[in-house]
Image (cartoon, rainbow, N blue to C red):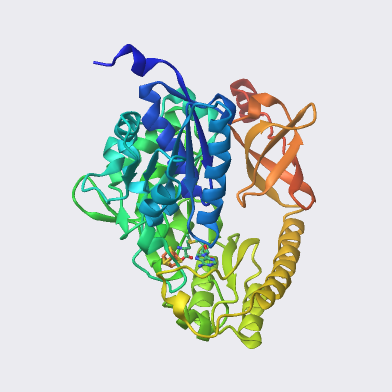
Length: 467
Ligand code: SAM
Ligand code: SF4
């Protein structure tokens, strides 16, 4: 039985670092704590529990965590009485080290596979233990994480993330994911459908399926068959009320024929694909252990575009990987020009202890990385601007998500995730409208809702038939 102290409303503040998967995980941690009386707060001053959901993908992540822990310790000295927990990939990778270095400043440290155990971990911390939980438990956390209440889901918006796959077996030589998130696993189809149904019934209109290597998805269905991401999207598309499906992040080698075909046959699958290549140089791709060449990547894109010609691409790029020469970097610039990305994320190579890249010779000096990043960013920004201009005059389906900043204005997202604003009534929020794009700015585009012809009434149709 729940004791009265357990249901006293308590306030939970979560600071999320890193990728969309961490955003999803933070929501699931809040869901796990809701039955114990924790309500989310945006104000750290009100919190009974502060969780830092950390990211380990690049250097300095753990330093950021320690400086945040220092700040929280100062707040506690000033009389704030909250418990402090560190979650996420830094916790997974450096659990014991955090507990040792931040003694007295942190109460619990736990990795991404333990979120369902959070209420118990808090109880142990309340009993005076400094909890460090970084095992990969045998049980499936998703089986034990409670679903969000419908009202809570709605406060999170009309679009939602849904993790379908975790971990990675690719071992790219720069990347910590296989170590922090573990081996590649896929959630069963029915479990995903149940979560999706719940979200859609609460009013969610767009789902982004998440995974560190999402297109390697191979979950088991109710009949015990292994199902790929294309078929999973087809099953999700059957949900009435769900208007749009996206997925991220994909590895080029896992763009199967089935998944590419799904872009032709599934109209709910958005024509916008995040497909990182990291580098345009074959030498660097090989050193990165990416398992494909530049030509392979370009061929995959050709196949995707022939499945759907309005497809646009985004990507990730790393500059300054060990051994990257000026010629290698020029190859990266040239692949950006050749593909014509609608958007991209760019990073300086960051040495990650424990990965093969860490001990490679010919590390690139910081100043060179900075120069290359600036040149790449200029090119990507110009490409983004060109892409924005290229949709002017086109009519795009826009998911209307919210009121606009100006009176009489509403805002939404194009299929290409561009923010679109336009004049229109608030009652359209939650619908998908055809919008003709009339102008493109740096961060958003402007459109005009296409007025649909009034449906003809039965009497008009009859009189036309008589005439
Ligand atoms: N699975 C995806 C793929 O294979 O393309 C990438 C997922 S990873 C979590 C997100 C991005 O972080 C990568 O695409 C890469 O560009 C960047 N990244 C990962 N490790 C990095 C490192 N050591 N230094 C710089 N960027 C890194
Ligand atoms: Fe990391 Fe992606 Fe490579 Fe996996 S495929 S190791 S997540 S970069």
